[in-house]
Image (cartoon, rainbow, N blue to C red; front, side, top):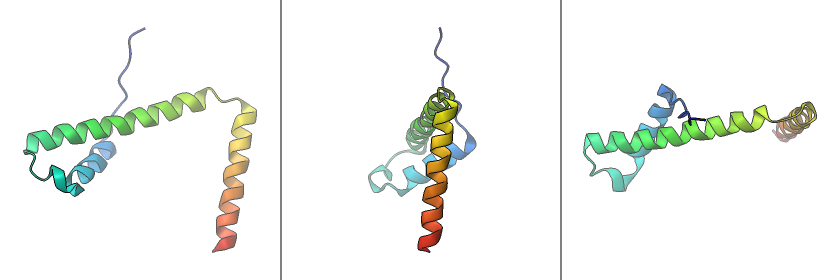
Length: 82
């Protein structure tokens, strides 16, 4: 089965370019090199998102309900602490 590369979105690229611009050691890169680094960072965002979706697709109904309950409890605790 061929490996499908993850889809890199414009938001991934925008975030990656911001990271590249904010890292002082990368200031000396040419614009082409900086774009290569940004695309690699954006690819890691896309891979992480794809991995999360793959994991979520494998969850059972019980696991989803547990995750929702945990998230709701965390949100309620955060609101109560405000």
